[in-house]
Amino acid sequence: MLNSKTYPLDSLNMTTISRLEQSFFQVGESKNGKSSKLETLGIKNCGRVYRNLSVSQLVEHTLARQEGILGENGAVFVKTGKYTGRSPKDKFIVDDPAIHDEIDWNSVNVPISVEKFDQLYKKALAYMQGKDLYVFDGYVGADPQYRLGVRIVNEFAWQNLFVHQLFIRPTAEELKHHHADVTVIAVPGLEGDPETDGIHSEAFVLVNFLKGIVLIGGTSYAGEMKKSVFSFMNYLMTKRDVLPMHCAANMDENGNTALFFGLSGTGKTTLSADPERRLIGDDEHGWSNQGIFNFEGGCYAKTIRLCKKNEPQIWEALRFGSLIENVTIDPEKRIPDYNDSSVTENTRAAYPVEFIPNCVIPGVGDHPKTVIFLTADAFGVLPPISKLTNRQAMYHFISGYTSILAGTERGVTEPQATFSSCFGKPFLPLSPIVYAEMLYDRIIEYDADVYLVNTGWTGGPYGVGKRIEIADTRAMVSAALSGELNHVKFHHHPIFRILIPESVPGVDSNILDPIKTWSDPEAYQEKAKALAQKFVENFKQYQRVPREIIEAAPSLG
Image 1: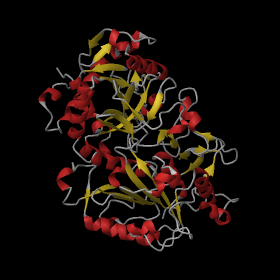
Image 2: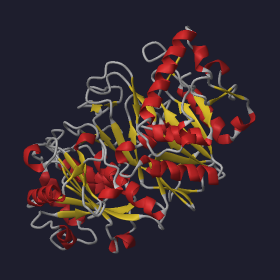
Image 3: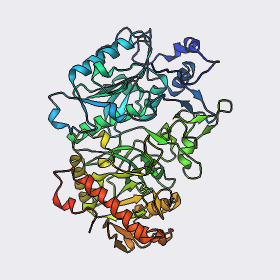
Image 4: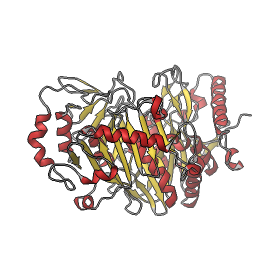
């Protein structure tokens, strides 16, 4: 059984809540603290129901319930237990006949029967009886025309703080009339039984598109709630001609917007939090016929090896109101050690987007003129920046390439290439081709330039070369966003056929063509061809792709 008491605290206990709880009653609760609205979900005979508590109240509850501790910077620090990241093998989509033919069933979109969902849902209802629950009612989607109402029901106070900061917070008037289109019920203490429940482990994430419900149990990792709602948006938004995207977005002072696609560890959050630009959002957006809009109201940034010099905005955002997962903290001085990966490489912080200076509220922007695909190439063969043709853009979007480094996952002893369709395969219930065609239409219609930016290695593969300097990456991205790269010469890469700039303002030209950074050009050619082969092999799985897109693949000749 999972233990919610992740940090021992002697000075606080539940009597603190008893003394203060009179002030916790919120709109929508009855006098005894229970909300009759939960009965529509079948939730009955629970303890107190705390709805839309303030940040301060949620922090008080988290500390009093011994679920976390307060750090020297004012943030709440928690441990998520056994699961320190998403568990993709434990996610299932309820296979209802009404949606069966829509879903792209594959290794990440795994079906579970309606009967097994109902069975686990009944277990969850029984588990919640007598327990205090935390409810957040808010929204996903900053554009009112497309937003959905979301309700999150939590067993833990700290998880309710997480969703309070990550989703869009309602006004008092909106809360009175709130309607939930999507409901997430997260009960980490409820463990499933693989033998009887039709699941793979004690953890389970069940997505029921037809009922508008996500049921999560057996794992405390908060990111499961966030990404489950994103999966819903990826399913529903396409029906409204909105492209859902796993990307960050920002704009300049003139309102020119840019998108940053990328998998975890590629720098999506870091590069979008630019002191010279205004942040719209760091992870999930929609692109409608009116422009782009943030799905969320907060950020979920990786903190491993975080330093103030390289990521000043994120550093300053980690203060009271922020929630930090799995970061080691001195028990006496309460000073975090962001360099310590002993718990996990996937240490993270959740905070509202308003904690980033000069952010855009509400998170909406015009049609982007620049789209950036981020990859962390640990083989050291991709250029630090290259321009893509429209067909190459579709090819690389469908491919979604980056590298997994040794030590970040069990059994990984050397860098491995990984491909995640549309830079977000685990969250795509529909075929990747659906999303790729929507992106292609938009970059054509709005004349957007697309660049591939490698934030990985140069001068050799991981262990031989070195990571590309963040200052150089920022300078290259700035040149792309400002339009400066429209005035420089390019040449084709002989293998990947992408366009390499011959100069970038403020960047040493010697690092722009990766073969020039290797001491052995033949070794470079061999490694580049090996990666190109992986691209080609990966793309064979896509059967309905137009021939002209397939022809944008790297050359193996």
